[in-house]
Image: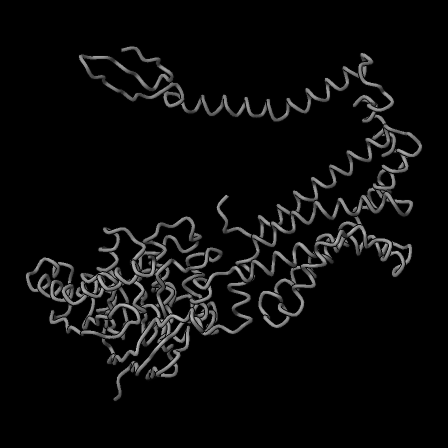
Amino acid sequence: MPDKIQVHGVERVFGTGPAAVAALGPMDLNIRSGEFVCVVGPSGCGKSTLLRVIAGLIPPTAGEVTLQHEDLRTTLMSVVFQDYSIYPWKTVEDNVRLGLDIKGVGKAEAKPMIEGWLQRLGLLNFRSAYPHTLSGGMRQRVSIARAMAVEPEILLMDEPFAALDAQLRLVMQEELLALWQQDRRTVVFVTHNLDEAILLGDRVVVMSSRPGTVIEEFVVPFPRPRSTELRGTKEFAALEAEIWKMLRQEVRDMVLEQERAGA
Amino acid sequence: MSINQTAPSVGLRASSGGQVVTRVPGAVETDRVRFARRRRIKDNLLRWGTPVLVLSLWQLTTALGVLDEQFWPAPASVFAKAWETIQSGLLPEHLGVTVQRLLTGYLAGAIAGVALGLIFGTVRSIRVALEPIISALYTVPKLALFPFMLLVFGLGPAPKIIMTALAVFFITCISTSAAVLGVSDAMHEPIRSFGATRMQTFRHLIVPAVLPEIFVALRLGSGTAVLVLIAIEMIQGSDGLGFVIWSSWQVFDTERMYVGIIVAALMGVIFQMGVKAIGRLLVPWKPR
């Protein structure tokens, strides 16, 4: 069977003429079914753009993305966004049901599915609350529940924990790890946090500074199921150091480029 | 070292060379319940006492002959006049006429404005074609169009209703269109990623997202609508609150003039508060 996600020579340019900015590519990346791939890179390297191209939110300016939709009765993919992009006018429950509403699933039929996810993400007691009454961590849980409720074959996550404080981030990583290990679906997880990428991913893809291309891939050798204790091991630290060595030059290049642009 | 103690919660004690700074609860913190109650009583006294004081002063100065009763009739005589006009049926009749015109014109203008604004916000080609015209017309003083309306629609109620509608139409249309365009990409992306149709996007995203801004425009429009309608009733026709005010001035019945002004003001306030209340009902997710 072909790979679940195939990215071939994908490029994305924003703007036209002299103001045009090459944000991404050419980019090649293959992701197998059931694989958890983390994409890391300096800010502005186009990793979010890559995710949006895969999600079909923006078209590539060159190249091609091919996705295998195995079972047409299920949803191909859903996205967890960086900011809490849940809707302030919908209650927690209504937010989680959004994907099912769009698919035309009736309220009665959706109810047990929604409740399962509210339960798993600890949101049952807040089902009738509006988002402005929730903490940042709660809102991001709603966002994850919304994406999971449609039971997608592919889950795309765009720095989902970036807006959370450091401690909450650790908790949410742990929860995601547990959640994913129950039903291993294909995940593309964009982050700038190496430690997060190693903890969660089967593979870590390192991107260059803008326009982003793949400069290196690391297979994460730690067996599943993993827990957050993995962080304390020597092997974990060694892998993190190795990836950072790769990335450091890219981050420096980015800073230099920004300074040039600013001067 | 001598330092003035400004608040009871801050104490300073000089010691050899340095000083010790202490922070302790003040009077407010030690008895919060009593403080809150006292503040509530004080606020209410100020809120209701001020208008009562102004009216009493007014009454007093007219009684003492400081203010000329011809121009400044005493509040008591204005209230007496109001009662008289209510009993004679004059006030209810003219108020009824004005309220009916106001509601008809306002609703028509608001509905048209919101509808066109939503279309502008979603259909680019229509926006590009029509929005410059709407923006240009918005700045035309609406009252200047009134003679033209009389020419086209005759002397019946239609020109007044249309003018009232125009007063709210432009502001709701322009605000709604801007609000739809202002819905951020971050809000559009989730629903697009689920593959929503245009109607689904409208229902789940656009309409709720722009409702708060529509109601701000509707509130602003309510003031303008009252203004335009009263002004038009003053210059043409023989009914409505505007007519009452203007004709009273012409026959120098200052008391009746004041009655008209106060009723028109109250009508405007109640109308605006009604629009605000409906907005609150329809936007339950906003923190109060």
